[in-house]
Image 1 (cartoon, helix red, strand yellow):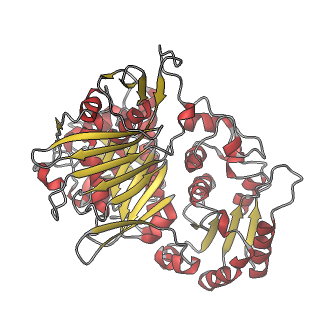
Image 2 (tube, rainbow, N blue to C red; image 1 turned 90 degrees about the vertical axis):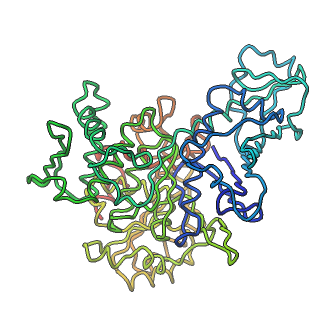
Image 3 (cartoon, helix red, strand yellow; image 1 turned 30 degrees about the vertical axis):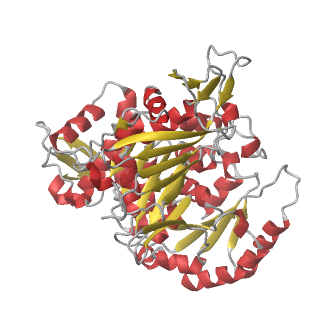
Length: 540
């Protein structure tokens, strides 16, 4: 679901330049220079977790706040709660949640409620006001009929709030949204401070003997699901550090790890703090129960070569059921990994500004931003262009099956709007950097005999003129190659396989396209054998 959030007078964001962001499933990035405010956005979701948790058990706190009977606010992760307020004015901190883009038609009827006797309303906006002196909060709710929740007799129920004897506010998806926000995993900056010699957690990262004990219990668990988590964690680290084989075992006193990699034994100190921090990050994500809805990570590129950063982000994102948010200096990484990018900068007056990145970077310029020369030094001399961000992470999973994921630099074209005949000049510029360029795009065919759209045919012709290998899928799109078992394993039992030409948005049980890579992650190479996509990947 899409949630639009406006944050005013929080730290470096004033009410004249509030932070306005939209959260969807998938990966969202915030790009900017030091001290611009990108890390502050991640910190907001971390510092307000306890507050979000107020909405997850019952609706009494919300009912009290609507009645302007202000309640106290607790921020357990902050030593001085006054720090959360913008210091350029004395006005309250405000948070506005816009739920208007949520489809309420899919909600089941309220239990034990005769809809003929009540007006069922949905929250359209929730406006939270947090006062400074004393620190307390109140709320206003704008309803789906355009009115505000104002009445004389409010009653909190298991599904929302009733008032004026015949009106009910169905707050169930407010509970869902705030449950997602309260169940997040925050990975802060300065991760060189993480080590196994300390027993104090680093934000949400488990360290010290407790972490080693958790690893031993996970790996030796009698529950197969836990052992699978240990195997997946080991495989993620093996791939990121490019080991042929890897085994991690705790010492008998749970004080350290013994590592066997590439048939050699190592102590933890020999592999360094970089290895330690990645082990601890993956472990903290793996042991979370329930699984985190969102993972928040500051500067994921720290201590990791550019060629491995995308792999790390998608591996870490697999532990979050809704999405991953990251702050970075690296626009190239943001464009490679994200469905959405926000640019964060400071005004001359010192206020932070957040703006969505709607521009399309020239492909050859983007190669420089991505650090292609560094990739090339490690043997990455091939480029594979795909249609959009969801295809990028999906193809990455497929290339892994063919053991080619560390041989191709993947770049997305920015979506279907970039598939046209005018791409030729950009392809020619890219060929000056490397001649080894291939492309794979959707056909968008509604049936096997359908003629390709004019823009797709012109794109294909531009590739031929530029000498670039272009693969147009025989089936409609990438998601039409997913088998039923992998879809159910990644998303749930009620999701089903698409027909070869079935449009995802018109399926009986559609899913968010941003989750395609999760399905691809569950596939085996034999799932692609005999398909044109499998033949293409094998030929690269």
